[in-house]
Image (cartoon, rainbow, N blue to C red):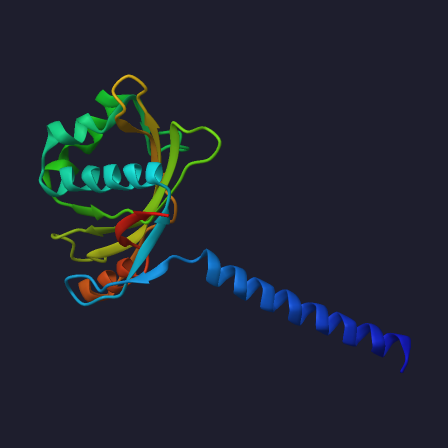
Length: 201
């Protein structure tokens, strides 16, 4: 067998082994399938630590404050130095600026925003957590523009050492909003990325 052909076979074998390893790693890293949600969509089951689950629950509570149009509860989830639309030159800096910018969203005027916890990760700093998950944006009065849009948010939470409460320090979109043709399609997209519960491993 020529050296070039032997090298090709070794190369193909390495590619195959790398592919098998990547597939196995991917299967291990993905959240396990969970029970279907109320609409029958398949969901994911989060794999987190107990501390990460506390942030997961806090993210869910934060989203619920907007669904209930509860401005006081929304404000309670914000760090005093919160930055929303983080990374953008026009970011809202500070709790008061965020409250002003989000007032119409919290009240449900012209836009309906919902989001769900997906994954939470805490690294070497135990009082900082990264949370990511899907959101669904609805523009009820939209005519020319798509009515439903989906994407993923990303937020950084900081734990107050005195009270133990987790509050949002940074918030931003992790992906550009994606137009969907219907609410059904948007719900399917969200269901593939959200988790219904968090169980500490």
